[in-house]
Length: 159
Image (tube, rainbow, N blue to C red):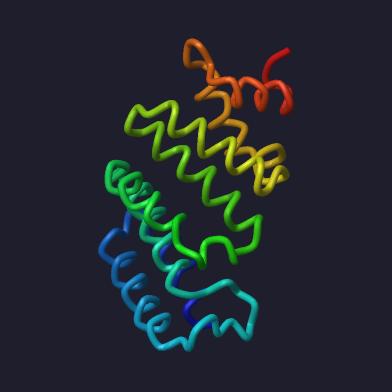
């Protein structure tokens, strides 16, 4: 459980602009993850090496290093352990990654992440205020990507 707390602390530090502290905490979490045997998740926290990599992506995005975040993202989601994470975890992560894609001006990448998030965890996309904001930002693109136009209608942003 300590590894999960380290990742949460790293994300909080990144959100407060404490980049160096966020990196230190992620490195500590990575050391904990390295000592796990296989998929040893006795506390059902979904902690492990893939969670550490997801946190690295999110920290990079939160500190404005969106190029780094979108570079790391495809590598992380190709890992087998990604598919074993709970749907809500993957959905929330994909919404955050959509924001990173928007930061680099990749509307198609953002749209793909949102549509993937909706297919994995619809409630994360349709009910989360942040997701609605990202959907609105992507839907403003002309023309709006088809999947996002559908999502915008589903969440009541368009008619």
